[in-house]
Length: 503
Image: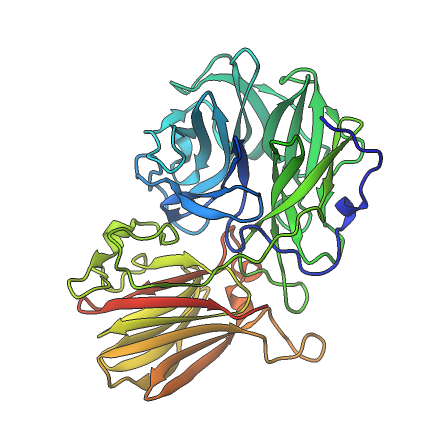
């Protein structure tokens, strides 16, 4: 462990300007591990299947999605459906030639934590082992030098609520706790101490927690001990990372995980959100994954937020669905891609559910400003979705394009036009708000424009206030998704393009 001579001021607020996430869009609760020169990050995915997206990097700043860890319903049981159910906080580790991934499926909550493993992170991952005596969220695995593995998690149920951080040694092959679980460090005194990660570094055991809730009071705290069981000594400058009560463009930072590079330096990944628009600010891309450096001062971590220059990733794509398998970006809420779509003999995809609310193929929106064009035949739907009660869409069937918006329990058509061609293109755009901010207007984070191509150009059918498709309005833990579907059995999607247009 290297030593530094001064505590960085970066942890109090960071440099000004826009901080670039390493994984922009709805990629929360990052967990990271390194094997040789390769880094891997996995994220929560909630109700979307396949679950737990997995990314690879060689330099910590440029990342490519390898796939999704939970690709079988045995690993991610459907159970209770709905917004912000499914896969919660997780831990990804590598030990003795094998990757281990442990997580919580809130949709199958009473089965306890889920453990899968793989020799190749690209999969396949194993059948699940359930830890039925560890009910709660945010499980972590950490090994002692003698091979003992410790499970640490946040005990929680949906009647009593959170009940603290607990720990027990575990048999990974069976999921059996090797002794009754016991309390460990409960945090610095803020509410919602969760997201534990335990590390053996030199001769000490360190624990990171997420405290303060996953909203604007979120932060990262640290403690250390000579034993994984404690007692733990809190860091004297806790929290070690927070942006609460600042004007930093990245808010709600927390749920962090440490990694050491081959050269001995340290880094940390954490979630954060980027609210925009008039007070109180609205975040629409979900909680994203950010990166910072770490120094060690007197044996404690000091987060250096300005250490890495993170380039803006290439987020645009065009998909004509010609490959035999869907790309890893495509996911489905409360169902499976193989159920929602089928290959059309003329190319593209058709939707056998023909308009069922869960029969939507989704991909994450990753930019503040963007344009998406979808080419359909006969019928089609292009939707911006935050959840099943907060969305807007252009829908074409029976020769007419109409814009439908749902906000809570209110669902209304707000514009329409005739469509006379068999093939047609639907467009969604996120653009700067036309209103001024408070107090001279009501500007939300953006405007959402919904259009259809008519003759040689696009006709805008509606322009909506983007705040209605934000977490501050809808609640929950997810972010915006771009969704496609067909309201009739004879419809098909031919291609879709997504283009960022700056921020």
